[in-house]
Image (cartoon, rainbow, N blue to C red; front, side, top):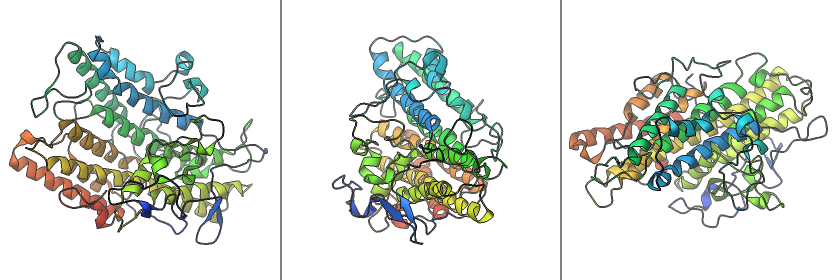
Length: 490
């Protein structure tokens, strides 16, 4: 990582949802688009219009936008989480896995093989139903393992086989090894569970799900959040939107379309970066509530189906809306609009340019990139703050009937999983030293009610220090950081 300030350029459009229509709980009052939403076009501070939809016609007269591979990987991450969510019920229903069987089920998504599994039906559910019912109808030849940080090393700013930090455990030396370590933990837990060996939480009751460990890890949340960082955020920021390798990322060619395609290499790379952010093509046509949950809306189409490639908001794009909706009314944020203006503004620049970029045009594109990535990472950082606060709230209920171990494990795991992401952005506002400090403070497991008063007090202090570190690095208003008890902020 290279330390830098968080750029919130004066290019941003007025909010996707306008974060002022939320009550003190962060809930959207109506779920409808308010008067500040993007309509047909929006403008930056120069008066230039920004498209309201990520829709661009190429030089061949057809759509030049293509990011099927990125959406496919979002689908794989979502389906792996859904698969894990159903594992406890299967075990309770009489499933007796053999050693390695559950890990292989998870690896189905991680190392997906289109040749053998393209006709398999995906697990994504929407109402109305998705347009695509099988994996092959979304994309082919794509998986997660080939694109996780360290396995696609061209242009990466670190060697993730040696430089990866944030999770200390024997055998964990890279992002892939951490994912497989967690797979192995789930596998072992499933075998034990099927034999009636269910671990107990700190309250002495059996844990709620097979992916929850006795020491407070929710492996389902850790795996999902970490993949969003080590695949989507890493690929987006350190590859397609980067500018450190000639002929790659923002330095790709733009004079001619690629053979048999409707896009130039530069257009395609930018679209792939947008795809990893996860926004639907009409991201800013809906409210924060629509973007955040359920993350899709058929109001953008008239066919009665949800197109997974264009109408779903995936991954970090949904968390940006959650943080905007949950921001303190005294300090509203608009990560959604800032990211949108960066992504759509840069793509509109490319659509209006028919040759390789001049130095001035490249600088303009870099500014759009910086705005989009800054909002993207800012939303991730806001999510870490949100879950730090969630852990603090849970710790405040220790020793009372209000304490819920499953909720504590979930809050902690989402916090940690999101926080591992920052190292993958070469322009992160966090320096390497700050990132290491952050994870020293967060640790690799929550402090439980059984830890003793001194350990509990020390970890509470560490969480507050971690939250303050993030607040300083990302310029967050104190109102969004919240109080010492975890209330009042995100």
